[in-house]
Image 1 (cartoon, rainbow, N blue to C red):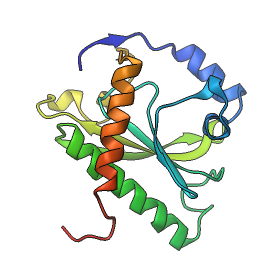
Image 2 (cartoon, rainbow, N blue to C red):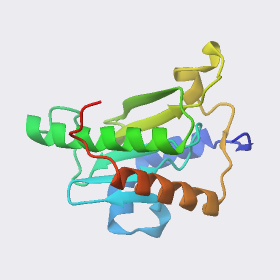
Image 3 (spheres, rainbow, N blue to C red):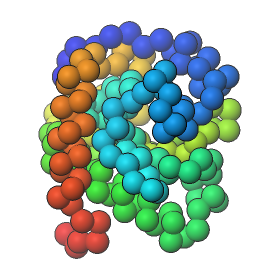
Length: 170
């Protein structure tokens, strides 16, 4: 995927620091906060990043609004969510050519406070100086994917998730 479009960083900052929780709004069905949902159950929602810098960039969040990566979870609830993250990362690796999967929890009490994990697949062959944090930067724009491309990707990842169990040994 090489088509990119500019990223409106100022608009994004304004939305996430002054607007409602984008994850809670998405889950409530607010069309202004729609994302391509890959799958959802009573505990977690998986959806495509609306502003991807990497093809297959997916987010995982608890359905319930929680703000602390570990502090708002019991250990069993945290591990349950980590099982979902594992399955999503493995599904993304099956669907998208991937040299390494980056897993991060980003956000802040000042914006994007609903805890969520980023599952970002680095494609093979990216030069070292363009990897890691550099691969996630939006300064050079975000991928310009059509709605059809996003929906197709969501379906492919969903199908791959359905075929992965979280308790299997590798």
